[in-house]
Length: 172
Image 1 (cartoon, rainbow, N blue to C red):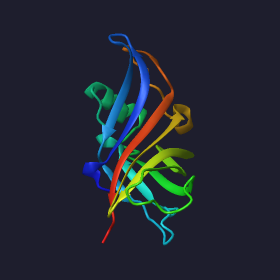
Image 2: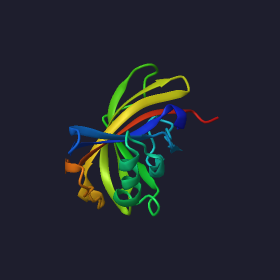
Image 3: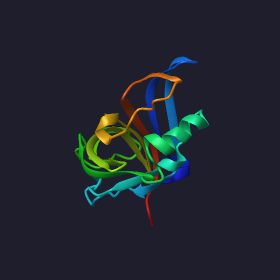
Image 4: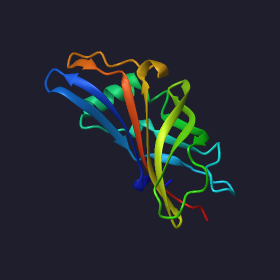
């Protein structure tokens, strides 16, 4: 994974007393990991990537600090981890220069909870570079995430959307 060309973000709908209905978006480029391709050109189960949650940034330092200290408890649980178990909808290897859609199935670990998730994924292989995007969503209680309880937050949707924009290069 090429971190400077990749990003992970979350999106949550919220209503703030001062702004009204909006969407909280927080992003980081602090990712490490590898997508392993087998001899058949398909992603190999056990491919994995880790995201450093301590580096998530939104448009509000106040939101970020609350997230670090309370919501995600990043001092205790600094990483989110995804380990691939399998791929659905991908019959053969990626075709050079052709965008392909498929679903990655695997284990997502946030805090001390691990859950099976499905990422709707698109990917393109160009030479030694794989680029793509993936998205999944979950409900906060699935990962024991407590919604913020602060005066400015009128309401918060418990659905979290995770998105990844990924660039990876073949290791030599």
